Length: 184
Image 1 (spheres, rainbow, N blue to C red):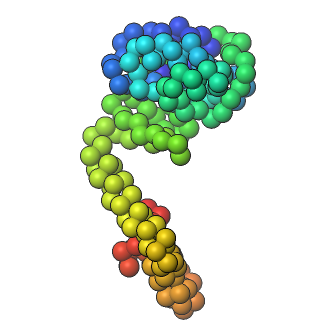
Image 2 (image 1 turned 120 degrees about the vertical axis):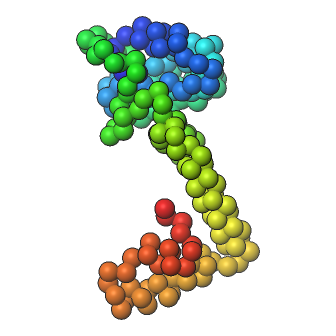
Image 3 (image 1 turned 180 degrees about the horizontal axis):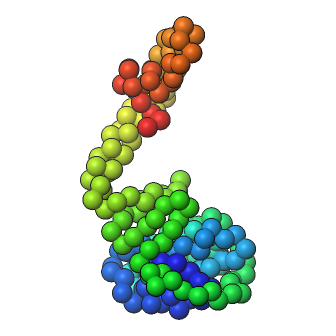
């Protein structure tokens, strides 16, 4: 949903949310106000939401930590909005998050490193790819811990030799060629 300076839109959206939904809040990336805080998080938790993603800032950080509901935002700003903007008719069904358009049919993946929005129809493909990458990287990490450096695993000297002979040869091409892709 898109935020226009008042919490009433949060309460409206939460009234129709399903257990486990994520509340994606478009506050236009504003860093001059904290558009959600502890009361919004407590209400979201009481409604069974799984978390909140804010394209903008939050406030009440200590309380949010105590509440334990996952909240992802661009940062902290201590004061709430001091404005009320007119609402678009689709404010409860479409949110923008940077260059992404997020709708109810999309899924949200989030962890300590950030947030990813994706079309719901691609969930299985994304999870399968992510698991494959995770497994590969865990094997590579174990190899490093066992004494086999990543440079060796990825045949980095071979890559440097090829790049020296062909300036257009990229590391990603090399990784694909040896089956060691870690950057895609």
